[in-house]
Image (tube, rainbow, N blue to C red; front, side, top):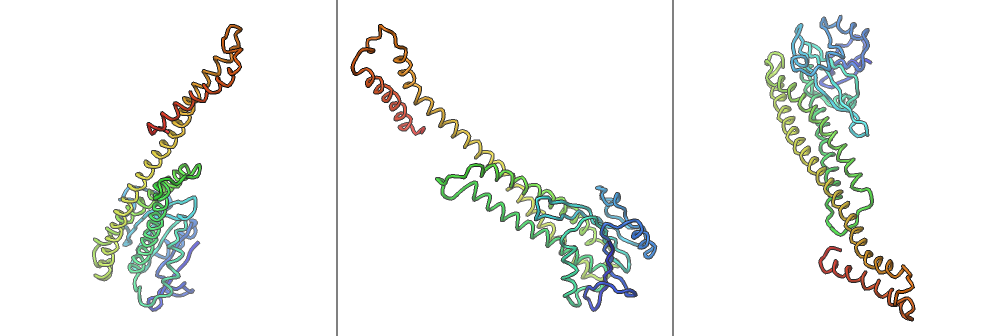
Length: 319
């Protein structure tokens, strides 16, 4: 699918036939769409195989008077199936081309926001930087949501009221949620690293390509924002690892408490079981067999032998 946008008084609008196109967004293009655009621009567009290359030289390069930049951008981060994929930005002298095979939210929201602004954009370079800012803002929102989710998990693992009983399976559920948070953070860190390399290249790119010094300042400001998010994401990753270790420790403690309970109970009932076993043999020569109070005495002995270890455990603080 292809969408062409034009700038009208600094506002982004869908291009009508015959209007000058400033931004072409290709979503899962077929070879016919790519060939038609390549013929118009006189450049080669990266294929899907080119976009998934991980080496920097294949993601950031200049060719035929155009600058090629590829970053990894996440999508579907609010669902149970988050994903990420490459997005290529081709900056030609008079047009920005984006190529993608998934749907990051920024690509849906940015055209609507850019259509409401006036005088904010004047060149393809400025438009690309604004789109990158929207992507970075989206990543910042995801990190803030992740931080709040980790706060909730932390309060669940370490409740303020230590005597509060946890519902069965809550810790196991927390482990699953922490694992998902870790996966989200890994996706975001990968995206931020590619964006950092990409925007860092733009910030150092010759001013003649960025068209105006303020665009270079904008790229440098965006680079600082990305670097701050990289640090913040790293801190969240460390916190996620800590919460995972703490939760596993809590699960181990709960299992130890269960084993301790059954161990104490088995020790408490071991002496009465021994007494009942002895007096359950029913040998003829047992002196207590014909005693009128033998049954009551046996029950009393069982009660005393059970109560004595229980009181001992309570005095020692083991139960």
